Image (cartoon, rainbow, N blue to C red):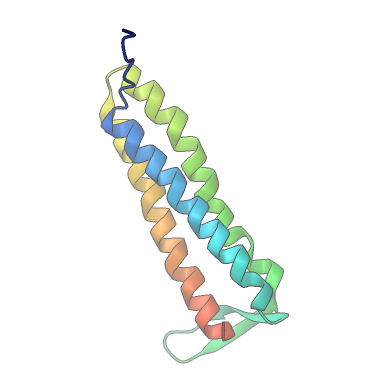
Length: 117
């Protein structure tokens, strides 16, 4: 009978994987909805008064890409810090990535709502 090899993934590495998968989902959802965006979209909002800046829909493309890049960076960081037994830094990097993902998701939702999608 063959022995089963189990793969152990530490908690910081698992959190960093989640911090990569969530931005990928955000990226897929955004680009699937971007075809329905008008050519002119809001790019700046005032303090509850309304929209005071307009631009091309291509100006919104970096919004989901930034968290995806941060998520991709956190996985190697988490692995390195986990091997060196310094989990605080991998938790911190993953937390920053998750925070940026949630923040960008809210910003994208605000832009999509204002654009009428």
